[in-house]
Structure formats: structure tokens, C-alpha cells
Length: 291
Image (cartoon, rainbow, N blue to C red; front, side, top):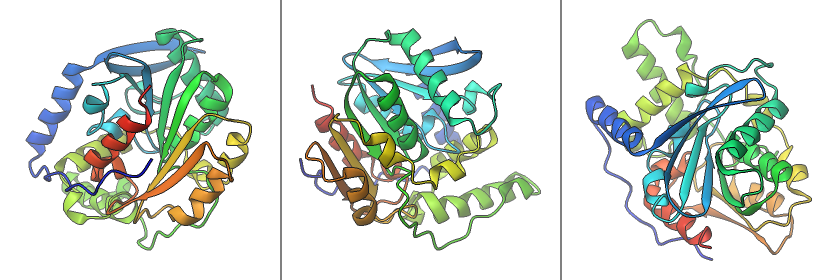
């Protein structure tokens, strides 16, 4: 299956009030589920009907990493999107803030409360969420197809050239937004025009509400071993300009010569490819996850 034809990037959202309205509208469309599992609280949101499609956000992220994808994907699936334990509305975990095993077990247990532990599903993960999704697929099973977008944990060289800044040292809101804009350019988004009010709003709120330490896990080489026993069909996609990986290096590592796996580079996109090229990513995912 080839990549969709190159589509125009979205029109930037220039006003913060408009960004807030976009998020509020999406919140109003979704159903919120506050689930307690293994001593933790996990907030999920759902929308649509059909085979469950679970979307896992990245590190320093929230369910709104998928802000430009949920509504379209829900046209064919029941989309379930968590704030992972230690993130967003789910709040801090009672366990250590870098306990990946606990995070994965809690995520699976809370999901199974919503859909049932034997229910088949499709699964997608972005960045650190690709690593988490790999663990979910390995531990839970019942995954029909897997998509890893900008996945972390591949262990191949990163190509980030612009250093991050510590936004926590900002003296006021304007300075904080400037620091976050810099970090989005350094790591997340290739086209500076796409670092708009919506991207900044999502990123600001996610950073403030992140309590899990994912950096070392993301920069590890753990995912190939996790994926090794899986035979589920898998599609890996990185942005052409992803600062965290080079697709032609990371792709073959995760594909591992398996015929049921494929990898691609999304033209024109950076790391946060489903935000920067939502139409192309949505078309790809709808086609990939067709039952």
C-alpha cells in the first residue's frame, strides 16, 4: 500500500481563541471516561462506531496530539484516546514516574474496562506512544493491525540539530510560549508556519501536565525486541524531516525483514506528522485500518 498523494498542509490557526474553540468542540463531540485501574486514574475519550481504534499519544503529550485526526478516523471506527497514566487529565501515577511496565499494565487494564479484554482492536502510537503501543500489542494481544508514527525506541541515530530550551525557566506566559515555539521547531514540526496557535496550545497544556519521564525510554533501542514475537500487520511511518529518526535507517530495523511489516517516509512532515500533514496521515490510516 503506497502513501497517499501529497496534500496541502492545513491552514495555520493564528488566534488562540480559535484554537481553544477547536479543542472545546472536539471535547464536546467525544465521550469522556474516567477509569480507575490498578490503583491509578486514567482518562479516556471516545468517538465514533465500528472496530475499536486506539490512539496512543507521545511523550510530553496528551490525547490532543491527535486533535486533527480523531474526528476523521471516527467516521469508520470507534476511536479511543487516553491521556496515558502520568499525563494530562489522568494526573500523576502512584508508581515511579518512569515505570513503563506499570504504565502499560494500567493502560491495558483501563482499556479492557471500556471494551472488554477479549475485544479485537486496531492500535496506533505516536513517538513515545509507538513504544507504548508496541508493549500493549505484545502484552494484551487481540490487535488486528498496528501503526507506529514517528515511533521512538528504534535505537538508530537521531538527527536533531537545534537544542531544546528549558521552558520551565520562563519568566512569564509570553516567554514560555516563545520557549515552547522554539522546542516545537527543534523537535516536532518541520514547517515553522505550522507552529500555530493550536500547536502551541496543545503543547503548552501537555507539557504543564506531564508527570512521566519518557526521554530515556524513547531514546532506547527497546522496541525491536518487543516487536520480535509479533506477527500482526504493522505500518511504520516517519516524517521526511523527523528530527528523532531517519526513516531509511529506523524503518528497516523495525521491519526486520518481515513481509507483514512496511515502513515509509511522509513527504514534507516533521516528527508530529499527523498534525503537520493530517489529511495524508488520515487517508493512510483509514486505508490501513480498513477491516
